[in-house]
Length: 141
Image (cartoon, rainbow, N blue to C red):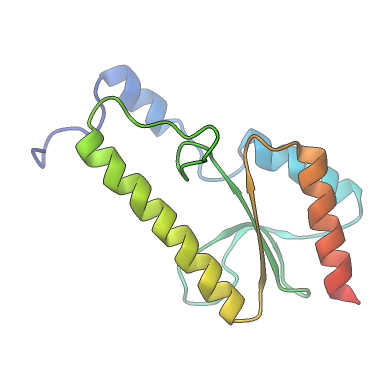
């Protein structure tokens, strides 16, 4: 692909992609509301390990629990992940790098003593929140 060429197939796609949020997505907000209502406090979009450029969606430092709520497209959900129709020579390697980075992040955090919880954006927020609350409370004791 030409280096100056856009990764977007149309100006509309470019606008849509620029509008994607890194944090505070609807699934994250729904889960955070429930977890907060359960009395737990957490950091948002925080790095678990200083100097490592990875951020968890919810981070519980005292209990060392890192939560990631992965988007189905960006992280190649086996149920809802889709294959890009346009510019696949750009997108397919990018999505593969995302998957590899997710595995590396999980491995790095677990080696440092963190419990890593990963959920898909399509999962029920109440069930996700219940899993998070149970894990954090279990690590407290």
